[in-house]
Length: 268
Length: 289
Image (cartoon, rainbow over all chains, first blue to last red; front, side, top):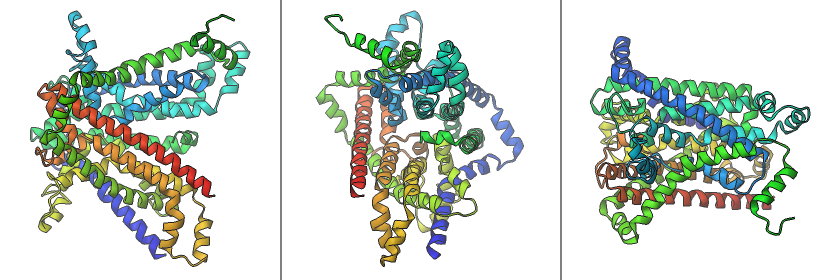
C-alpha cells in the first residue's frame, strides 16, 4: 500500500512542521541559556505578578462560569420555555465574535464613556482597565464552555432518577446534589478545564480592556507581548513556557477524561 | 379561565403540566441575567455606537484607504489559510480515521494543541520559527523567501490557529463512511482517485464546508498570533483587528466601532450561510440514499 504510507508520512510531516515545531521552539528559546536563566526570568517581579493576576482571574471566572453553566444547562435541558433556542444561540455567540471586537464591545458599554460605566463613575466604581474589566471579558470568552459540555449529557440522562428522588421526598437541592451532579461530573470537569485554559490564555479581548499597567493589570499572555517588545526575548519565552506547559497539561487531562468517560463524546 | 391570557400565564400552566422539576425560576433567572450582562449588553453597546454614527460617517470610515487595505489583507490571508487548512485538514482527518500506525493517538491529541496554546505564545513561537535565523526561516532565506514580517506570515499564523476546526469537522464524517461502497466502486473498475471524487468527497462535503467555514471565520478575527509575525505595516501587513486596536488607542471609538461592526456582521452572516448550506447538503445526501 504505497498510497497509505505516503499519506501518513505527509500528515505526520505536516503536523510536525505546523503544530509541533512552534511549541518545541518555545522551550528551545526559553532554555537556550540554561535553567538558571529561565528560573530567574520567570521569578522576575513583573512576570510573577502577571502570573498571580492570571491565576486570580481564572479563580474568579471559572467558578462563575460553572454556576452559570449549570443553571443554563438545567433550565434548557429540563424545561420548555419561550426563547429557549434563542438563549442557546446567545450562549454560543461569543465563539463567533473575534477577541478584539469583544473587547471593544465591553469598552463601549462598561467604559467611562459608556452608558453603564458612565453611570457608575460618580460612585467611584471603575469597570475597565483593571481586574474587573479583565474578569468581565474573560467571562465573555469562556461563556459557552461549561454549558456546551454539560447540556448534551444532562439532556440524555438522569431525568427518571431525578423524578424518583423528588417523588421519594428529596428537596430540589438534595436531588441536584445527590442525583444530578454525579451524572454530569465529568462533563462539568471537562468544560471547566476548557474554560480555565481559555481564561488563562486569552490575549486579544483582555488587551483591549486591561489598561496595560506594568506589574498591575498585565496578565501572563500580555506580559509575554510586553517582554517581547522590550527585546527581552528570553523573558518572553520563559513566560511562554509556563503557558505552553499549561496547554500541554490541558491536552493530557482532556485526553484522559475522553478516554475514561467517553459519554461526554456526545458533546462534540 | 381568565379573559385575557398573558404569555406568562400560559407558560406557568404549561410548566405545571409538563415539567416536574424544580428550579426554573432560579436557573433561568441566573442564566438570563448572565447572558444579558456579559453577552447582550456589550453587543448592544456596539450597536448603539454604530447607530450614533450614521450612514455617511460609517461609509467615510469604511472607504478610507487604510481600512480597505486592512480588510483586503485580512480576507485574502484568511482565504488562503482556509484553502490550505481544507486540504491538510482533510488529509489529517483521513489518516487519523482510516489508518492504524504508531503514534496515531498522539497525532490525534496534537491536533488540538493550537486551540489550547494561548495566541500570544503561538505568535512569538511562529516568529522565532520563521524569522531569518529561525529553524524554518533559515532554510527559506537562501531561496529568497521571507515569511516573518510579511503577508505570508499572517497566513502561517492563521493556518496554525484554525487548523483544528478543519480536522475536527471532517473527522466524524469519515468515521461514518461505509468502506463497502468504496470497495464496490473499485470492483466496478474505478480508480482510487475516481472513488475518492465520486464516492467519498460528496459525503464529506458538509464537514469540509463547516470546517473551512469555521476556519475562515476564526482567521478573520485572529489577533494574538498574527500581530507578532505580521510586521504590521499599514496598507501592507496590517490586519483589521489591529486597525480596530489602533483606532481605539487614538480614542476614535466611532471608527473602531465601524470596522468592528463590519467584521462582526461578516462573521455572523458567514456562520448563518454555513448553517443553511450544511442543512441543504445533508438533505441532498439523505435524499440520494
